[in-house]
Image (cartoon, rainbow, N blue to C red; front, side, top):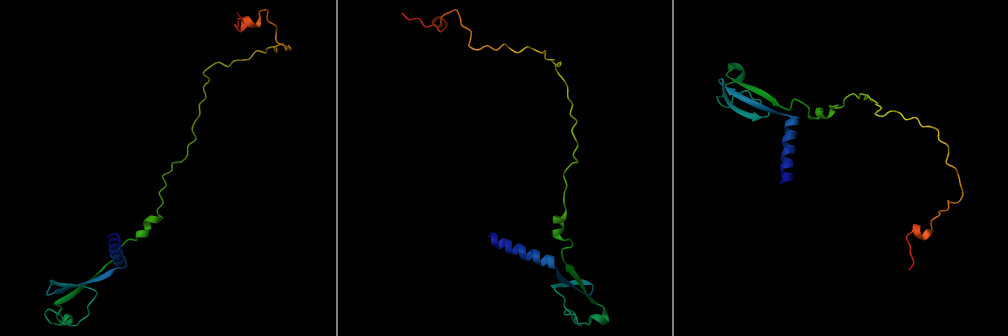
Amino acid sequence: MKKLFAILTLIAYFTVSTGFVVNLHYCMDRYHSWAIGTQEGDRCATCGMSQKKNNCCHDQVKVVKVAQDVTAASSIFFAFSVPALVPVQHTYALHAPVNELPRPATPIHGPPLIDKQGTYLRNCVFLI
């Protein structure tokens, strides 16, 4: 079904894009018939009179064709970009600057200081 629809659409598009001629025949200032393509003839098929001498019949030829090119839309480029603006950055100091005071380095000593309490009291280990 999809293939059939695609083929019919292709045929319709090809016919309209290449164009075709429609011949409208008027006999005695009334619309009589139409045909695809042009028909050349000296006499009218309806009344039988000569078309050039009596001017009772005339043919109107119309060309049916797509006026605009479909591929023109692909060459249009939409630029949705906005010119870049550099954001203004404000810096506020919410706290007062702290000036560090020079401190002396901590004294360096070798082994840890010995505590006067026993280790068993510090670790809460009591042997009974």
